[in-house]
Structure formats: structure tokens, C-alpha cells
Image (cartoon, rainbow, N blue to C red):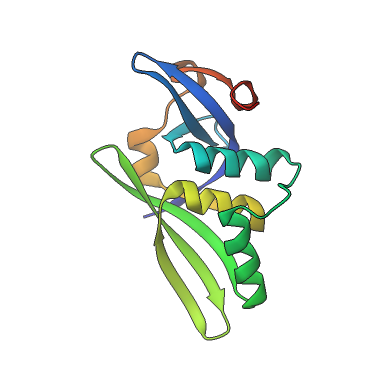
Length: 149
């Protein structure tokens, strides 16, 4: 299947009937969005990498990014490739000294690494057709910084 390049539009708080939840928004060039609900730690990590300043001590995703660098491995891309019962799945594609690797990943972890490594994030075109929404179809969104103290 064809892969569609996405930008990480940001981390937000989504307001919906069940309450408030962190969400990372992926945006395509044709102004469609993929909202992926994520955990609080991952939201803080992605938001920090996008907006700075860097934390005083490395977060887990910083550690993994630094480890890849120390091992002379590169993150070539992150692909969000499937969804099952509302849960997205992703794959990391790494370039290493011993060859290419693909590793199963949660999308939020893959996105957190991609932002740090300036690696592209792709979504499968079939999944895009199934999951993408326009801006007016998104839940009410608030800035993530409203949550942070």
C-alpha cells in the first residue's frame, strides 16, 4: 500500500463526552487529520520535543534517541500501518551498521522518536481513508500547555 507523509501538528487535550484525553494530531498536505489518543507521559514527551525547552534529565524517548545515535543507527521512518479495535499500530524502520531493521512500536513512541530524529511519519493510505477527518470533525481541542503546571 501507498504511504502518506504526515506532519505532527501538535499535542492537544481533546474534550469529549467521556472527559479530557491527550491526543497527538497528524496532518496531511491536503488538510486531513488523524487524531491518535495517547498516554499522558507520551503527550509530555512529544510536546517537549516539539516545543522545548529540553527537560533537565533525559526522558525515555530522549534516552532511546541518544542510544540510536551512540550505536550509529538511524531512524529512517515511522509508519502507522494498521488499526485494530480502535488501537493504532506502527513500525519503526531503522538503518543500522548491520542492515535494516523494522521494529513494532506504539504510534506515540514512534512519533516521539521521529520528532527527535527529524524522521518522517507515514500512514498507510487505506488507513488514512478509513481514519482521516477534516478539522471541523475533530473533537474540541485545547492547548496541551493548559494541562501543564
